[in-house]
Structures are given as C-alpha cells and as structure tokens.
Image (cartoon, rainbow, N blue to C red; front, side, top):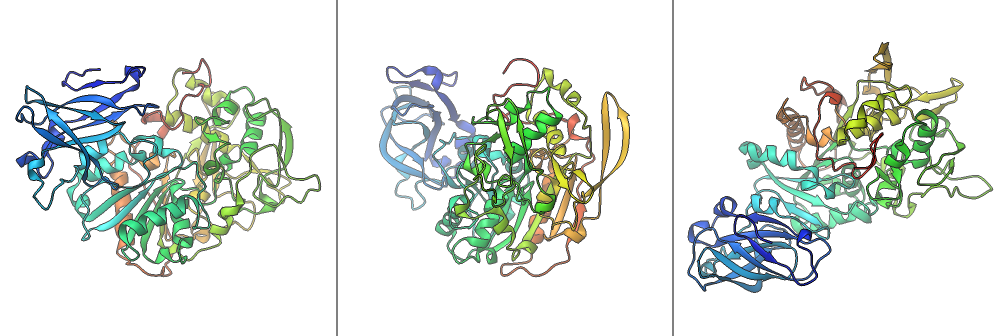
Length: 578
C-alpha cells in the first residue's frame, strides 16, 4: 500500500493490504522532538496489522533530507513509552534523500534516529507526547503509559480507566488529556500516567490479585514505595483503585495516595451487572423490545458480557440488605442466555441456603479474590475520596415507547438513555410497604447514584429521591427526580452531583458545538487540587459535603457525542444490525 505522503508498506505474500492501518508520525510531531534541531529524530511511523505478525517492508518519509545511503537507527518506544530504544536494526536513506527503507518485524511504533547524536548523554531522544499518543498500541501492551513529561517536582497523577475502555482511544481519557494539553498550568502541575489494563480479568477486591495487584506492582516498579500520588478513575477503575489502596502489599498503600477522584464508579456494584435481574425487568416491562440481545449476551460486544469475569465482578453488592434486595423469582425469557432463569439469592451476592443446590442459570462472580462487600467494609480511606455521580433528572418509565425514536440511529449516549430506563425499572423488595420498590431511578445508565456516591445503607427501603412531578409528556409518563438530603448517608469526603450526565459524559464531559467540556474538567481538577493539599498519610476525618456541578447545558438526550465504541455491533431497537 502507498499513501499520498510517500509512505509505502509491502506485506509478505498472503497478507491482505486491507489489514494494515498506519499512522505517519511525521513532520510536525517529529519537529517537536528535543533533538530535532540536530536531526536526531528523522521520522516515525505506527503500523497496525491485525492478526498478522509477519514482517513488512516500509519506506518512510523523513523530516528533512539526509545523505543518500546513510544508515539510521531503527528504534521502538521503551517499556514506559518515555524514550526511543535501539532495536539493533537500521533504516537506509534512499537515493532521493527524502525517505528511508527498513523492514518492520511486526506491528508497532517505529522511529528513525540519526546516529550522529549517539555520543550525546541524552541520546536516544525522548518520544514526544503527540507521537506516543498517536501511536496505535497492541492489546498486549499493558501497564503505565506516560502522557506528559516526567518531572519529580510535579504531583503524580495516575488515570485508571473503566470496563472495556482499553478498546477505546486513549482508554477514554482523550478528552481530559486534550484539555490538559490546552492548559499549560495544569500540564505543569501534574505528571500524568495512564494505567492500561485488561478488564476481563478480576478486579482483585483483596488488593493482592487481579487488576488491583497489577496497579500496585506497576506503581511500585515505576515510582518506588514512597512517592505520593493522586488517582483519577472512571467507572470500574475506581474499584481497582480502592482495592489497591486498601489491600495491596501491607494494606496501607492508601497512606501514600493523596486522594482518589472517582467518576461514575459503581462502589456498590450495579444491578445492571446482574443478568437475571435485568432480564426479569426486560421480560416484565419491555417485552416488545430487543433489549435482551443488546444488554446480555455471551459476546464481547454486549453491554454485560456474562463470560467476562471482570464485568461480572461488578454485580450489585446488595448493600440495601437482604430484606430489601432483589425480588427472587423464576421466569422464562427467550434470550441468548437461554429461556429459563432464576433470580436467586446468589444473584444478590448472598450465600444460597437452598437444599436444591446453587443456581446454575447464570455465571457467578469468583469470590476467591475477595468481594465488593468485603472491600466496602474497609472505610479507612473514605475521607480521601471525592465521588462524582451522574443521573437523569427526568425520565419516562412506561413500556417501550421511550425507545421508538431510536429506530433511525444508535449511539453511545442513545444506548445509555435506553439503559437508564431499564435500570430505573429494576425492582427491589419493599417488605414494609407490601410491594416492590423502584430504588434505582436516579442512575446514569450503568450505575445508580447511591452506588456512584458510596452511600450508606438506608434504614428502610427508601429511595434517595422524590418524584415531584407526574405529567403526560408526549406519549408516555414523565417523572421528575428530586434528590433528598444525602448528607446523613455520606461516607466519602465529598459527593459531586452531575444532573443529566450519563455514564460516558462522566469521562468525556459535555461538549461538541455547545461547550468545550472545560467546565467539567475544571471541576475535576479542583477536586484533585483539594485532595493534593491534604498531603500523604492516614485519612483525617472530615465533615462530608454534597455539591452540585452544572454547566448549564440541556439534558443529555439533547446532546449527541461519542465514538460509538461503548456499545458496538449491536442491533438497534428496530431495524437490521449495523
């Protein structure tokens, strides 16, 4: 294949040209390198060859002409991505002097370095942030990835992504990183690293297994045992972070952590991660829709992948108590998971006392590496947490009519709008009132607000909201959500309410034509600064605080954004798959 820039790639026999994607890290980015003035970085290219590991012949354009026949050092990023590392191979400048040819042993990012700077103690040169961020990364490349210039004088900030987010650009941190890059004072304040990890693995609620141990090992290897750090986590990443703080090593890593800001983290898990519960809701309330296939499947693209231990570990921890938990029942529903289901005590994360044996209708979380309930019993570092939670302030709850408008388009945020209605209809037992209660109406599509804010158990099956308005709106009932005083149930240092923010807005902000998202990230950075000011050590008691964030934008059903990568390759509510 050949591009307009002059980049040429020749694959071995049998490989398909269409399987190759390239990123030319070219003139503008390479010129930003520290050693570009003396020609140390002559050019760079990133190559993706899905499922192909064979070598490829590459001709790469150069930043500036060099002597024909000159040899250049072929380099790859080092383990941390902070500098180029010599591969022992060379690239040769062609007769024109404007390109160089080399053989790439496989996919990845390659830099062409002029060896004349080898005697310089700073050689090989650092890989620029723009080059590193533009480079495609293989799925096997996990760990800490630098996002700006390392500097021990800065406050260390580690970003921990959510479930399946490693499939998305920059693990979904691209909006935050772009904002940092546009704000030099923030860039100068923090040394930022992304922790990229495989969320199909267990979280490791004991802190000594799974992703939590991987995070601890990566921090210890890169920063030693003592350097203080901040953690900023989206969704599941907040649970990985808390498990690391409470259980890794000697169980006191939270002392070195200045603070943790969680964005839409399911601190109590999510009812949506209990497939039988969700399927029962779909059977009872959304019978005429195709939601079962969209939400629950054995496929990687389903919202809840029941074959994925990392996702299934996010099941609701039943913190409302067994007397107000899941309403147990047996039911039938034609779905990819089978026709007969039992919504059982095991689905509620409780021991199964039945003599008939365990419920075999759905996959159960692995309890050998700790449980979410056990993690939540450890409150030592709660005063170091600022928790952000989003919810829809008004929603219609009757039948399938809210979804009819989706038949022409399907995006991440439209999918979350759909998920909000499903979760709002998930019933919990209300023994005192003699019926079932809707406790999860205030949610962001993935996480109920009481979970995002790590609230304490209510003394009774009492919603955290009032329904203050019930009017006929278009073709379905319309409910207005008014939150009660949450302060008596607070555990964390501060709760930040984000009205009309869905689960992905909590890692994107709201933007597009209406806003540049900066209001949201300014709020998050203020929270980070507040925590950093406290210094390392044990968490000091604080008076809990509830605040509300607002950027004066319309409700999220009026805002369309996203990369269509949160829910991929699924059937729209009506029409064929796309």
